[in-house]
Image (cartoon, rainbow, N blue to C red; front, side):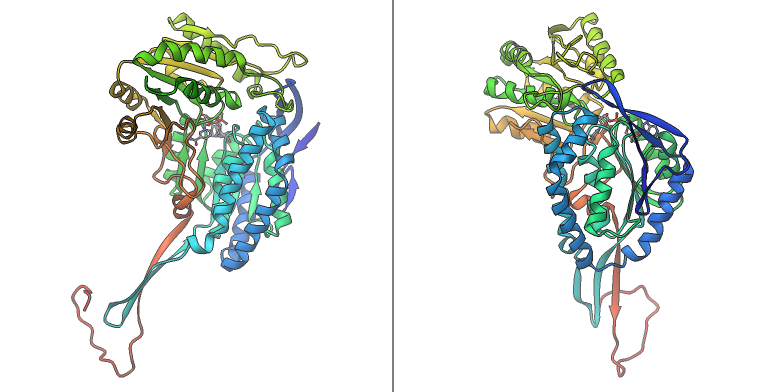
Length: 498
Ligand code: NAD
C-alpha cells in the first residue's frame, strides 16, 4: 500500500500531516492506498511556495508561458492511458470513460495554449485629442482549486490550465477519494518545465479546505462539488474578500416529446443516466415524458437498463463500473427503497447486484423508477448513482414549469423532432446548459461551463472566456504624451473628451 503525499514547491512531502484516509478500489472493495490529510501548516507551505513562484511566473512572457502549455499538452496527450487507468482504479469508471474525461480536460489545455490571443487588450487611438485609452488584464496571484471525486482529471483541468496560462500560481485540493491522478499531473507539469511552486497539490479534507478559505494570500477560489459545500465555500471565500466561483450539484431533466424518435432518445437517456454509474454532474436523472411518449419510453428504458454490462472498470467489456464507495452504494440503494415506499413503480431494480469475481465491489445496477412525483425523495435528492426517474407530464409547458421549479439548474435536454418546441424550450428553461437531442450538453472548452440557481454560486462560469476573466483583473490606461510646445493648461471641471 502506497502513501499519497502532497506536491509542494516541486517535491513530494507528507508535511505536517498526522491523519491519513483510505483510498479504495471500488471494483474490488479493497483499500489500495492511503492519502495524507493536510493540516493548516501544509496549506501554509503550499500557498507560500505558490506566492514565491508568482513573483517570477507572473512576469514570464506570453511566449514562455505558451511554450510550457504546449509541452504540457503533448505530455498529457501521451499519457492518456496511464491517467485513465489511475482514474478507473480509484473512481471505478470504465477505461473508455476515463480516457474520455482526460480528452475533455485536454481540450481546456488546448484552449489555454491560445493565451496570447485570449489576453489581448483593447486600444482606442485618439479617444480625446492627443489621448489614447487602452486596457489589459493581469493575473490575480495564488488561486486555489477544490475539486470533487467524480472527474479527478477533467474538473481540475477546467481550472488550472487557464489560471496558470494567465500568469497565476495554483494550489489544487483534489478529492481525497481519488487523489493519485493529481500527483501524476504534477509530474507532467514538472516535465513540461513549469517552474517549481507554480502548481501545487495539497491532499486533504475540510481542514485543508478551511485553511485555504482563510488564507490571506489566496486571491481566488474555484470549487466544484455538492451544493451544500458550494454554498459554504462561496460564503466563506467571499467573506474573506476572495474572488470565488462555486459549482454545485444537479438534478438534470430530459424532456421527451411524443414526436421524438423514442428508440434514439432512450438510447441516449440510458447512456446519460447510467454512464459512469450516474456519477456525473451532467447525468440525466429525471426523464420527463410528455403525453403519449410515457408508456413506450418506460418500456424501452427498462429493456436498455437490463442490457447494460456492469463490471470492473478495467474489463473492456464493461459499460458501467461500480460507484465510488460502499457508503455511496448504501445511500443509493436506500433511496431506491424509499422511492418504492413512497409509491413510485420500480421497473428495473439495481439493488444487491453481484458481479462475478468482484463480490466485494461497490456495485449498483441500472435502475428505472416510473411514476415519480416531485414530492418523492428520489426526485428531490441528487442521487448521484445509476438511477433514472420517469416523471409524467401532459404538455411541454408543464415540463418547462417543472424544470424551473427545481432548485438546481445545471443541464437539461429535450428530445423532439420539432424545431419550434425546441426553441420554446431553450428560451423557457432557467438552466445553464441545454441540449437539443443531445443528452449531456457539456460545452466545448472555448465556451464556459456552468449552471444556474443552486448549481453555481458566483457570477463567472468555468473555463472558456469566463475562465480567463475569472483568473485576471482588468486595467484601463488613459494616456497622453504632450508635445513640449503644447499648452499646459488644465481645467478644474471633470475631464470630458475634446
Ligand atoms: P463534495 O462536495 O463532497 O466534495 C467536493 C470537495 O469538497 C472535495 O474536495 C472535498 O474534500 C471537499 N469537502 C467535502 N466536504 C467538505 C466540507 N464539509 N467542508 C469543506 N470542504 C469539503 O462532492 P463530491 O461527493 O466529491 O462530488 C460529487 C458532487 O459534485 C455532486 O453533487 C456533483 O453534482 C457535484 N459536481 C458538480 C459539477 C458541476 O459542474 N456543477 C461537476 C462535478 C461534480
